[in-house]
Image: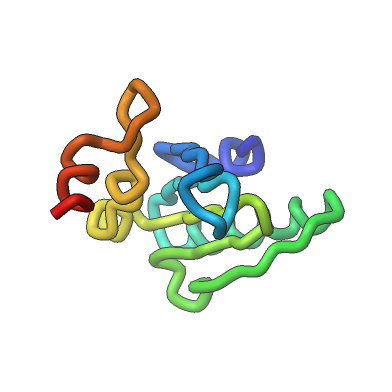
Length: 111
């Protein structure tokens, strides 16, 4: 997340996925002000991960409205603000303050 902070990412959210999904242990969601900033942040983060000895696959770099960086146990989504609000991933993975699923989502899952 330091790399995102250093590149002026906005509204960074970290979501633990352990026990909720087998795709990753952690998800990070952030946004950039423009497609150029989103693409730059994604490339720099992927480079930083590779320099640290990890692997990073990038998807969505061509349009840079929503770029996904898959670093194995951590998935990073970098959005432009309006795209982030449209997809609203935070709500999809929301947990309440007590660590339980958001009650509205739990009710929808039961229906």
